[in-house]
Amino acid sequence: MRRILGIDPGSVITGYGVIDSDGIRDFHIANGSLKIAGDDLPQKLGFILKELTLIIAHWQPTEVAIENVFV
Image: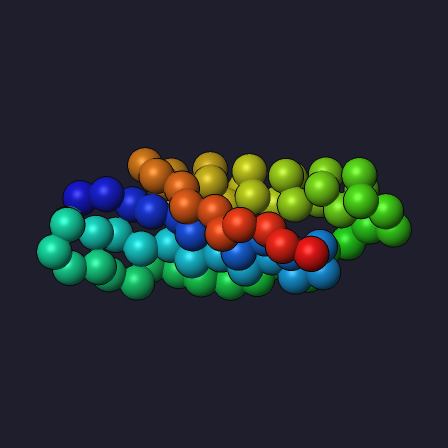
């Protein structure tokens, strides 16, 4: 069974979802969003790093998928 963390990055809100997959079926485990704190981009990126580090430590995914960032 693989545990996959999907991340939808954003500078205002970053979304995430966690699923377990056996290759045939996918099972929802968790999802949520982070309301990004910070006044400038370095602060916002630091916030995202800190929060995603906590999410990764908690859910322990074996794989991560990140949506392309577009402006």
